[in-house]
Length: 136
Image 1 (cartoon, rainbow, N blue to C red):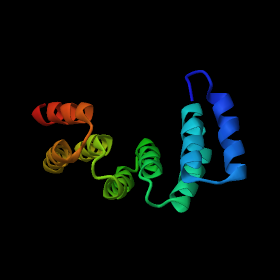
Image 2: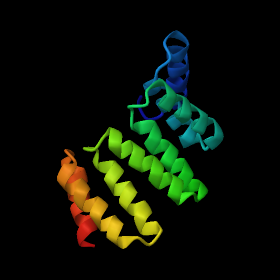
Image 3: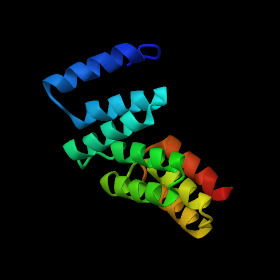
């Protein structure tokens, strides 16, 4: 969806799940709710997305962000680790996972995760960001 078209997109995704429910649609609905600040409803949509397609990493990442926002860093880490198993080449997972380890003061694990990400991610922008994080 395009910026400024969030309400229309929300209606369209709701229409789509009434026709054929999917993890991708539920995750997008959850993300739109998250942007509105409706965290409880967003969480329900992300959880439903994980049930519909447990192989999709995105709803696990979004649930991790909700947990981190709530201050449950340990659970956020577990959710990001679950996402990482599903998408070991996705750079954003390594970036955020390292940042969460950094928040709990585990600098060894932080650096290890970022180094692993720099080796495994296919996204060149994420690789560059990971290299900068490692050297900082």
